[in-house]
Image 1: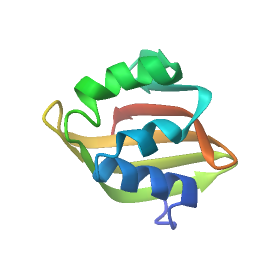
Image 2: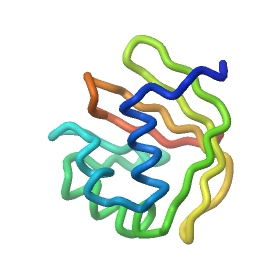
Image 3: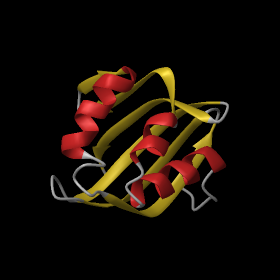
Image 4: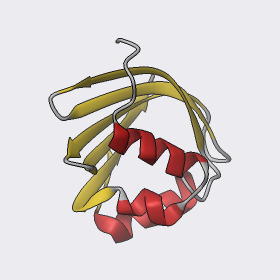
Amino acid sequence: MSDQPIPAPIAAFVEAVNRHDEAAFLNAFTEGGSVDDWGRIFTGRDQIKGWSDKEFIGAQGTLAVEDVDASDGTVTIVGDWRSTHANGRSKFVFDVDGDRLTRMTIREG
């Protein structure tokens, strides 16, 4: 991975997460956007919100970005995730369409 600047849509997303801004977090996704959290798939705003309420924004999560790699509509961030639900180095892979996310995949970093 390289240490590239974070593309604007992902930088705005990380900032929204770190300030626990649920509306900005949810609005970052396309209408049919999805989250793949270690193989558990949440699609659409209602499912993503339900997951986030317990495990992401609602768990007061913060992400300290360590590495960034961006190419062809995909941005990969590895960073230190801290929350009341889970902690540790994690890899976030974002599929981007314009300025919105179509998918966020979370795995061990």
